[in-house]
Image (cartoon, rainbow, N blue to C red; front, side):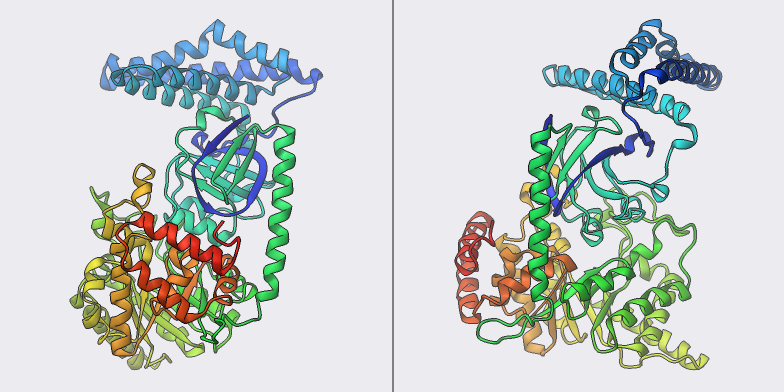
Length: 589
């Protein structure tokens, strides 16, 4: 049994078989086989090795002819290993002695080898480690080539999984997780990543446990191994013993019981003890999540991220596809609940496979992303604006522009919106003329200019995920600097306070929609800073409501005043935990 610790990004416990994505989704369905199947397994193994060796030989010859013997010899090494009597005998011995399936024997043997090599490298000079990484990657590639031949049609794309698995990978793009179904993907864990990557956000939306930033572990696990993912504590357990499985089964049942207790809050308002109303809204990625908002007691949608319409598609979504997705959300929530639709935020960690694929950039978070991308692709942008204006006739729909960094950008967006209104008017197509317009505050320049921006819009929404990373110059997806990424940093809190004051001066609404708003720890602080609207992943809303219903505004304001005089994130975090334990014992844990 091995225990790995990483970053908890989506709570809950899952126990099940591993599906390792560095072998391209190849799924090993059986670890062991009955004794009578051993001869057939060995025959299948030999045939697969012969086929893989033959392909390696052909590749070596082809590469040598085109690029010379140095590169060709890479595949020559593959060929030599695949034909090695010693290699074959060790695999066959695993099948005979352990009753392993041919697939599992290959995966287990190669991954044990990779783990031994990497363990040795940890004690070796740095100059040797690049060679180890190369050998490890080649070994995993050989594993993949053999498994493809052994499994044939049993290789399962994620969309076609028929039984539950736990996904393990080095990293996952949002386009990967967009194919996850909670019915078959019960959890995932990755070597890389941070707690506010969009992959992590989607895991929360799908309500499946997830842990990221675990560091290297894929060499320790084979497809089909039993895995535990604890997305609450940030733990991955490989090959757990019976006692550990029993303990986590008990924890899983306790979490379900707690969720049932939260159901009692669903129809109650988020009122403080002194009867101040805090509006709680849901963040969603997919139209089907609108029902989750209602189930968890949200009063509407405060952030509808729309870029997932663009993932895993070979063409841009049409106006009709945009309209139908938005219509579904509005109709689910009803005409009186607000739905804030954020325009496309493609780029950085949200690349898509659409026709306007973004070029690889040296620094994508500072490049052509979000509103900058839309303003350079006006046909794409207008298509979305048309759909939003049309669907707004069905309910309380509002539009919000992301990543605004200058007043000029915001004015460009408003001018374009007016042009689209004129086009719809000329075509005789119904639309909402007085559509409320807001902007996200997620770039320090926007926070600094909030007083001027507030005169141009109907509402603000503070996107704390990006505001934190741009303020602190910390890549939110980089586990190597994850310790520097903190919502409690005084610089971030002072920017938020300034935005709230600017909004109050111009009498416009201000919402907080980043991951910070879904953490009970920060709820008293945000209320004390003057926030009266929070938007979070639906599953987090009951916890936030529970804290708010035990809070007094004057108490929260005193808390905020103390925090804004602090100098370090550590001071702020420790103070907030102490205060939350006092307000609601147990919540800070």
